[in-house]
Length: 212
Ligand code: VGL
Ligand code: ZN
Image (cartoon, rainbow, N blue to C red; front, side):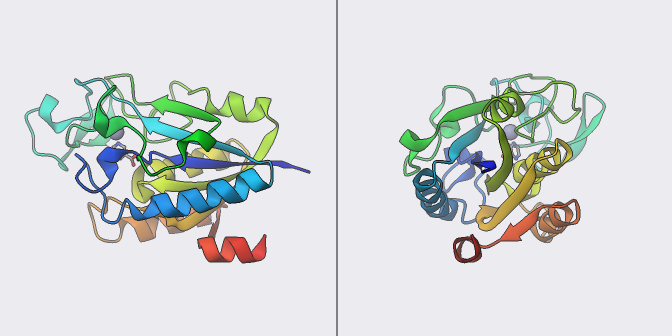
């Protein structure tokens, strides 16, 4: 049987209620994650997570440039949205959500450590210059199909899914396990359309459980 893994994207305190870059209803994704974790574990499938993990002086932070959060600029020659300081290494905000069933996670892959470039995808930085260990880990475990959900729909989920498709994985996205930043109101809807048009299959959790 082909091997499958659940990939939980950035289910961290700073993207949830009270966090530095809180996403509306971000916390609601944790219940979906815990259901999927049980579902995957019951089938012997792997569970992995990504973690946004920035140094305090990360170049994606508006504070480093003297500009307001959510403004647009450039970083390392790439267009960049400047964010509030978030997911700083070793801080509470960078920790995975306390209600997430973390014991069940087989491996966590950190990203965004390099201060001069942002890293939305769990696989590569935004310039595709450096790769995390995630692809090698998945290949080592002969995983060819992913179930992806997490935060945020319009940034880290979207770019993780697009890279996974380019790397050749079959990708299923659980839409109600995702929430977006929505700098523009339609960003999450557009992100789901982009993922689907590149080849991802979209499911609600209920659809997924019914059809698999
Ligand atoms: C994210 C903005 C900045 C995300 C991370 O996890 O989607 N978004 N850093
Ligand atoms: Zn970040």
